[in-house]
Amino acid sequence: MSLAKLFSLIQYPLPHHLLSRLVGRLAECRQPALRNALVRAFIRRFGVDMAEAAEPDPTAYATFNDFFTRALKTDARPIGEGVVSPADGRLSQFGAIEAGQLLQAKGHRFSAMELLGGDGDAARRFLGGSFATVYLSPSDYHRVHMPFAGTLTEMVYVPGRLFSVNAATTAHVPNLFARNERLVCHFDTEHGPMALVLVGAMIVAAIETVWAGQITPLPRGEVQRLRFDTPVRLEKGEEMGRFKLGSTVVMAFAEPLTFADGIEAGDKVRMGQSLGELAK
Image 1 (tube, one colour):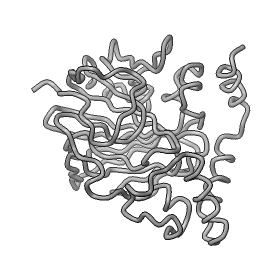
Image 2: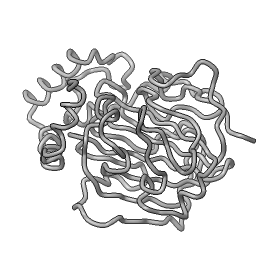
Image 3: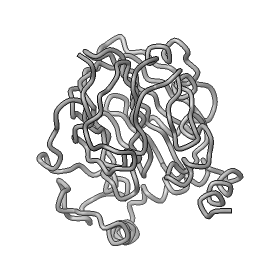
């Protein structure tokens, strides 16, 4: 048995939510000595480039979470043409949504309907469309931005597990992104419907949006839907949310996306980097 497979199997019996909430409490600690020790250790371990940060002094943040979700300098991430990456990370998979299915990893697919919280009507909007998945490692910038402009129409909280979403787990846990706790954000755009799915993961303490603040953690229960009668308009490249510790963003587009030449699964991408062009 491979180490990756063993790592995946070990996660099944773990108390995912309890572990994540305990880490979340630690990450909100305001005791200066502990907070600064955590931040400095993290910077050393993951080689964080603080020169990119709007606040480069690692001791200036009130909590570890404030440091982790730090803003970048305004010119740190130029916004490219067409559809752009919503985050720094690794483009783990991308391509066509085939028969309502998205590719998770070699040998693993999952349904758009399950990803979107069991909403068959929403899933049908994306038949024949495209998707792209960006994995954010702990060392990445953790704010999520708009791939292109859109108006928020609905937000859906979907309860679930909190498996890790790294490459080892995505290769061995079936339906991973449709099993984990997640926040589905539906947008109307000039190219038709778009969904941005912020997927929770092991030790991800919270998911936030710019329009509603912190959404998770919520008590585990039923799918919760919130529609927006007052439009929330976000422009291309504008921040829409953030993760407190690493996770994954799954993008679904109603129109086919012609991906940029040379892009391959597993490539590192940066927020604002052009991924391709949608059909006109």
